Image (cartoon, rainbow, N blue to C red):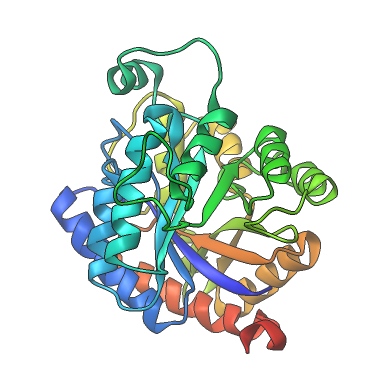
Length: 332
């Protein structure tokens, strides 16, 4: 494994505001930079009361301005919500302001419900143009000057990733010769097959010579297994409420999950099963097992906790573990 990184949704805990979430994101990003994380990504979601990263490019710029060396990026931008030119201009601007620090991960899903998706797009096209849109977007970052240019954007060569949780993204990333990040932190079902398809089908490109895989893992680390399990209950509750049509701010943790219907709780636990939860020793064991099974080039961790100090501590514990798992050659 070459690097470890962090995915943040700028979650809004119960009793707090979006402004609080932004302040926490900046503090967490600075902690991640001190702890040696390579990337810090933010994700696009809309019409979700518990997530403040809707204007993703704006927040990326804010975080980049409050950090110094760590790569900051999108994990990701939901491309069907935007024109490729608009995204190219946004990320070309970011890359110009923060040279060699900006990443662009692209997703094919809307990142919201269909009513909100219509409000975002206004005129929804029936056909799937994601592959063509990705290629158009990459073209705007190149050196060639076409009739339409992204200014800023042209010549910035912003690194583009394909994000996915199915075989479609794996096949597209392989065909285009792009790095691939799998959303295993909430959708692990097709992880094994997708990585196999991507690695087997990869075609070298001028952007990438060989396959490069990143997997996402939910991490909740604390002094003891019991404390970590308690802190993680917030995420299980949030997932269950979303599944039952009751989205809201990130719930406070609880020792009692009996109020969640058993089938919904089972769904939540399965969806979040690509994870490492517990004491430093437990997290080390579980992360090492995941890395041995999937052999990722990078790992990106994430973890939604109601208490900000606990989330920072979880990040620091994870960094201590992951630093030991980075291969000596890559670390050099």
